[in-house]
Length: 160
Image (cartoon, rainbow, N blue to C red; front, top):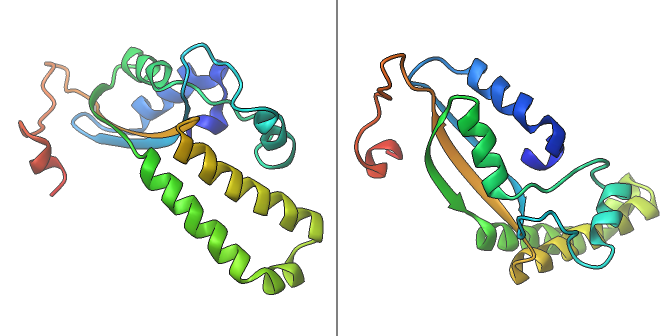
C-alpha cells in the first residue's frame, strides 16, 4: 500500500492508521519499497513505465521512511519483514499464469493492455529477484495511554 500513497502523504497515512485502531490493536501493512534511501529511480525507465501505464503517481519510499512516519504517528513497530524473495516468486507465478492463458486474456482486454501487464509482471519479477525493489511488511501496535502494548513477549505468540 505504501507505494500508492506518495511521499508527501505518508504522514497523513500513518496518522490515519493510528486513528483506525484501538489501543492495544495491531496494524499490519505491507508495500513495495525502494532499495535506496535517497529515492533514486528504479532501473532505466522502469519507474516511468510503471508511472505512465500501471500505477500513476506511485512512489516507492524506503522502509526507513515508512517506519519513521508510523512511529511519529504514535504507533510502536513490533516487527518488520522483507518479503522480497517471496514476492519475486509470486510475480513469476502470476506472469507464467498470464502467459499460459494469453488467448483467454486477449479476449478480455485490449492488446496494448495485455502487453503492458506482461511486461510489468515479468519486469517486476526480475526487479524483485535482483534486489532493485523490495516488499516490506510492518507490524505495529497502538500502545495504551500507560505505554503498555498488551502484546506477548515473543513473535511466536503474536503469529499463532
